[in-house]
Length: 253
Image (cartoon, helix red, strand yellow):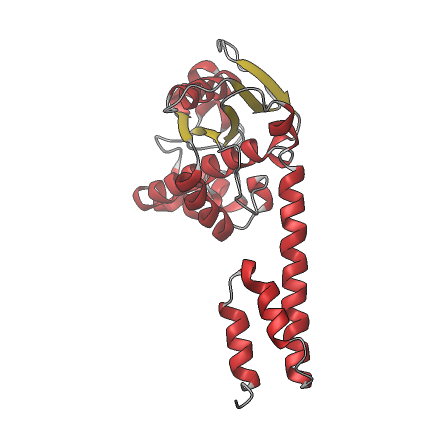
């Protein structure tokens, strides 16, 4: 049988699933052509990265293992406490006990494309997902911290199953009877909180892109309501929009 061309092997590596890398390596490991040796090296590096990521994810399940006796473990996180405009959004996510989703992390550490990709996987594989929001008007009314708690309570109430324990990013939510475990920097330490942070971030970012279509002068699609120089300049020129937080923009207008 004629040897496969190097270009074909290269394309094969591009198309191969991560899980099938060991058999790809085995197939071409004895091929001594320098081009193939390089391709096999690339495959080995990719496999090492995959194994390292699996290990990182296992470490990210530390709290989930610690509280494994509880039935449904729910991670909770919020996004949008700092912006000058738009709502604060909370996510509540219950992942399956044998969750095998890779690359979950604090949403701020992921690219927008990776967050979008993971959002779809989380929505598909999660046992339950709940989203809660508090509007800019509500933030002005009761302050950002209370509005965040309100959004978190709403996210919990929207879950299709009732959680037995909540793993929260840094806070204890008042008015909730379920046991809570606040974890500092939880979105980078717990897979459930990381998943909640991704769901909340993607939900809010998509919403700000929609607002940008109605209120294009503020650049919400790119700044997501945060106080970038362009956003502040637009705020001073055009004045506040209906989704600006009056209590947040006093220094600018």
